[in-house]
Image 1: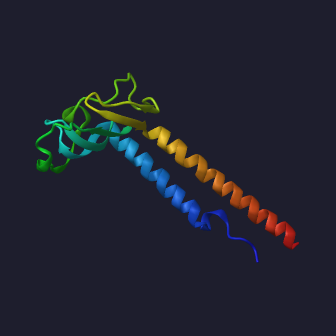
Image 2: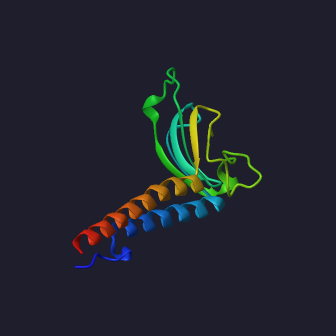
Image 3: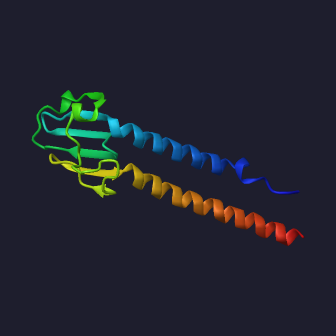
Length: 144
């Protein structure tokens, strides 16, 4: 019995789906800024996750003296990159921002470039595909 070809592997199509999603997200973030915020940024305590100018970012800020902790809300904002907030990273070419950077002035923040996410997800995927292909080839050689 011959092994299934590469295009019949579930791991192959799952990797293709992840890479296409990350590429679409990168392309979308160049013109459109999106973020989800839990908390009240005006009062100082909040958590936000979003993407803007080619990066995905996570910001967190907490003030222990915040008396309005019960008034948290969850909201989603989107719009033109320059319309919602300033770009988290100031780079001349925002299509390829730095791979990892601090993005928040108000608290702890982390930004990871979409191109870096694509790179760190595609390398393990390609390694898994190559190892599986070698294993199948080795098993074929043993059967003959």
